[in-house]
Length: 413
Ligand SMILES: CC(C)[C@H](C(=O)O)[C@@H](O)C(=O)O
Ligand code: SF4
Image (cartoon, rainbow, N blue to C red; front, side, top):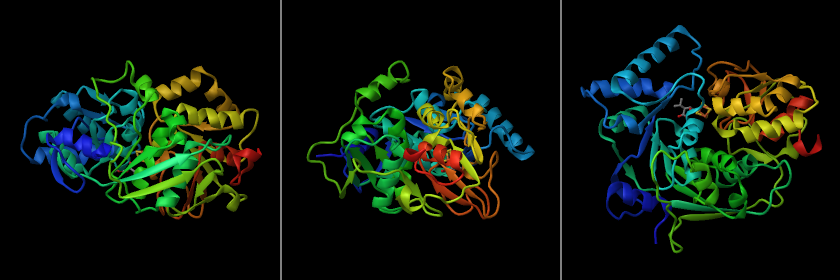
């Protein structure tokens, strides 16, 4: 009678464990990006060790401030590149390859049953593939670099069941925002979430990644979708090693259960400055925006760009609109299949793959009092620029709002 998390931690710690037990777990893959590797590497060096535990199990994408925005960033990038070379870490993804949470799954590091730990809070994205994906701080990451292990408290699990067929232009992001609005920003703190129901089964891999990505926005350690044929198909020819799917037992114990009706779901918007401040788009329609941002590890995938292109085809954007693909391969596909051309024709600014202005670092920061509708996962005060206001929505709602210059229901354009 175990949950997916209990089973993954049992395997990773080599003994049968239950929720709330403390374990030392073996990590399958460890990730740090340009933002967090700096501290992780510094702390690793302070330990006085020469070599990391296993270079092949460490993955380092550069994504947060890429291409480098300042001389300081360029110097930090330089130092980390050098360390990666010294350690012989083969899985290094340099400037322009894309956002860590896109790069790891694309390259087959997120697999069912694995424990994948990243020095980034949205590492829960890997749950979309049935992995226990979770974020840790940079000094915890240095422990993993050193030993390949870390301690955890096995989380209790909440069960979220989403049912019903989504209406056109109601997307996985709307389901995700609805779930977070229902559970609350701290409703799943230190718990894992397991996602069930026909809405999830019908979701594409891309949609499931959006859902798992935002599990941390309700406090969850992990947000896991049980793997199915779509998962296996995605991993075919991609998975870097063999894997064993893990499922919960029928009588697994959940600490809370939530049922989400998606048949009547409207597009959702999270209002500033809290992610769980969620309402139907109809309640906020007409709110003027200064900038539209489509991208990030939440919604920068090909499917998201295509949804935007479908709405923007033959139209002109009314406000500055930024589209940043989550990876180079997504951008390449968007160029090849004509999506990029439609977006550029509509007046969109296309940025190089990476986090872009999500964290307020560069490439589209907003000014005092400005409003941005964004497909990202966080709308915290000041995140995209001091004094700015961030509204979170789906790529369809963002694209519809780009056409009108105000928050718009994508079903009306
Ligand atoms: C910079 C990094 C530590 C941070 C995170 O952990 O999430 C960032 O990716 C974010 O989205 O806020
Ligand atoms: S895209 Fe945004 S949320 Fe995702 S890793 Fe980058 S900064 Fe964090």
